[in-house]
Length: 137
Image 1 (spheres, helix red, strand yellow):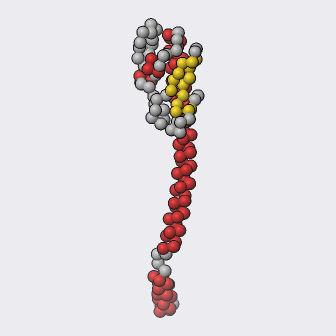
Image 2 (spheres, rainbow, N blue to C red; image 1 turned 90 degrees about the horizontal axis):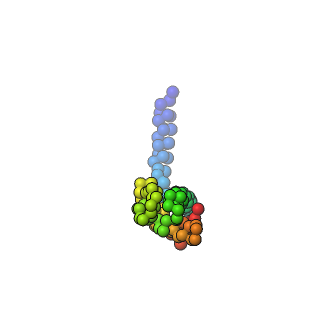
Image 3 (tube, rainbow, N blue to C red; image 1 turned 180 degrees about the vertical axis):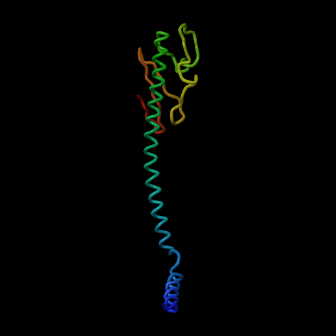
């Protein structure tokens, strides 16, 4: 074997490598721009899914509160005047509450109170989204 030839080939490769080490500014900017675009797309996608899950959580809470209202009505023969009646006893004779878990009123996923209104012999229960629209069951 010719060690001089091997050494010269290795030194040539080494010189080429040192001349072109690292990335150019254009390459780095291109990668940063691509990562920014991907992050923007991911953020929009996550926000859409987050709103969908918040609406589903609001509907689940509406169903749970609705069940508590129905149970109150069965026990007392009338709909509660307010949602607070599900948590604290008033003048009701057959009150068997609190009708909600942990004895507290849940909040909407957006941190607001649920909207409750008695309409004749039925009731309406809904949650207000941040855009002003309502979520119902």
